Image (cartoon, rainbow, N blue to C red; front, side, top):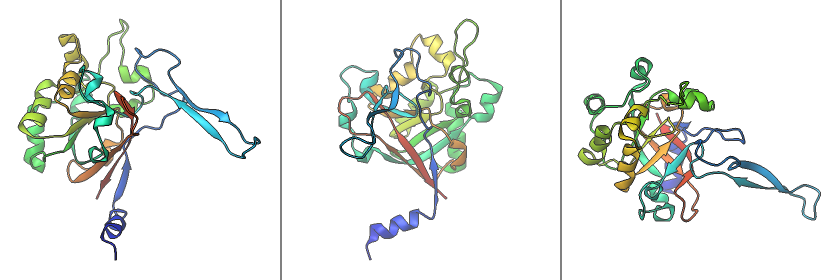
Length: 249
């Protein structure tokens, strides 16, 4: 009778896949954020008061758990959360899988050749796509030492994006956003060489969005799924935790 209701019933027949990590007071976050920045579920109104109910407060950094970054996170004067609406929460999902290469090299940075090989198999990245990089790194959650893969000298070792790969998905193709399982966009070796998170600065400087610390990318197909990234309308946020999920056959 009502078209959208019928479409929803149709979508419910597909698989709905969680892409966000669960969070608690022990979940890891970037070491540069001051200690005490996380306090989840603090009871501020308990059962047995005048109104029989329970109320909690939640304190967390914008970049906490699976989270979205807005351009103003890295580029002064660029848009923050209030510039993005519910229309920026749904995308065609592309998953580039380099997990086998990461097993051979933890510093592996996805290449343009990897993306072209994907397109040879599945077709061109569509306009407005969300391009996710599957590395297998989410299996290390929630062990912060394992996620950062820190050596005895404090150096970090993890895979990620290369500048050339990001330039390809945004300048050759017209992707809307990208995502990954690691805490940072840049492969650690490239970040060390550049002395900066140059890849993250590049994509945010182009007004694009990204989601970090994704999970369960092994459960979604390389092409054909749609993805949702829902965030609260908190004004002025540089980043916010997201509830992210895919709908796939």
